[in-house]
Structures are given as structure tokens and as C-alpha cells.
Length: 275
Image (tube, rainbow, N blue to C red):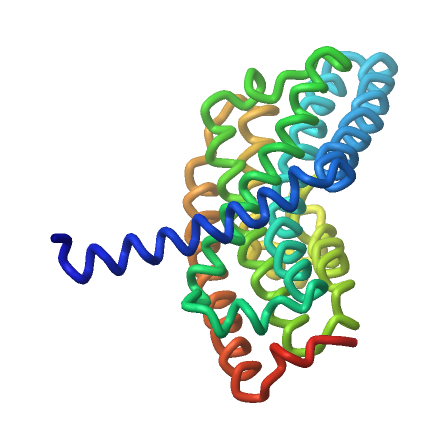
């Protein structure tokens, strides 16, 4: 007979799997939800792909190389954006359905809920960004796997982890402030974009904003991506910094989420979700 610790781990994994299946069934039973995952990334890569093709034809080889970096940046930025939305929207769906009270009186623990949100975020990001990256091959002749090579996994992971951290913070804030704050799921992402060095180096920013950008993992991911595409140089230091900051941001986000969940439990907010 399995030891109590083993039975506990199996039970925990079972609850996580049940939550993942719940969101998977919700996603696959609604074609508008599934279409939305691919729609916006595809629109972006198509639009910006044609713009970079035009600039490459007008400016020659240097701009063509910069165009590859730009298209890679579009896809990597969407990895962060979709990763964040995957966490925050899955949590918001529980709030919209007024299901949080049911979840938190069940044996489900907060960290198990978080793991299921991360898993669904990964699935949604792979569908959305993967679909756009696949369509970019016949439309623009741009294959991100050929341009970035094995380092793509590291760039993808560096942005995804920070997306999860920001998604947890958004979920915690909406839980604390109510559904009137759900716009934070989109607002915080675009507040970060100008200082995240997505399409230009950190050095372009004013000095105070460079310090802010340097504290964000995506800035180091995009610096590393440009070094690889434009200089054929693997910037290992940038990626180490990105993952170190990811761990820090995830720890802070997890602490904020746990504290606000406990506060909501004490105040009975799970049964009073609203504007």
C-alpha cells in the first residue's frame, strides 16, 4: 500500500489534472475561444511581416536582417502576452462564473490552482503563438525555429515565466479589487512594453527607464535575441539574468497571490465576487 506522502502527491496531481481538464473542455467546447487564441497572433505576424518585407526591399540587406529580428520580437512578445493572459483570463473565468467559492471549499489548494493555471497558460500560448509561427512560414518565408535555433526554447521560457508572474499579480489584484479591475489584464502588459526593449535596445531609453527595464526579464530576453540574430552571438549572460529575474518575480507574485487569497478567504470575498 502506498505511503501517505505518495497518496498525498497523487491526490494533489489528480486535483491539478481535474482543473486542467475543466479549462481544456471549456476551451475546446467553444470555437470562438479557440479561434481567439490564434487570431490576434496571426494578424500581428501577418501585418508586421508585410511591413518588414517592404522595408527590406526599400533598404536592402541590413534592413532585411533587422526585419528578421523584428519578426522574432513580435512572436516572443506574444509569448509573454499570451502567457500572462492565459493565467489571468483562466482565473477571471472562474470569477465570471462565480465559481471561486466552490473551488476554495473543495480540497483544492491554492498552489494546485496556480499549477493548473500555469499548465493551461502553456497550452494556450503554444496554440496561439505556435499557430502564428507556422503560418509565417508560407506567408513570409519566416521560420523562427531556423532563425533562433535551439535558443528559441530559452527565449520562449524566459518570457513565459514572467508572463505567469504578471498573470498571478493581475489575478490577485482583481480578486482584491473586484471585477471592475479586470482591465489590468491588458493594461499592465502594455504599460511594461515600452521599457521591455522589445523592438529596440535598452540603451535607447533614458537612464531612469533603463534601470526599470533592466529589472524586467523580457528586456534581457530581447537583448539576447537581437545579439543572436544581428551579431550571430549567443548572449548567455542576458539569459542567465532573465531566468534569475523570472525566479524572483515568480516568488514575489506567488507571495502576493497567497496573501490576497488568504485575505479574501477571511473577508468572505469568494462568495461576493462582483464589480
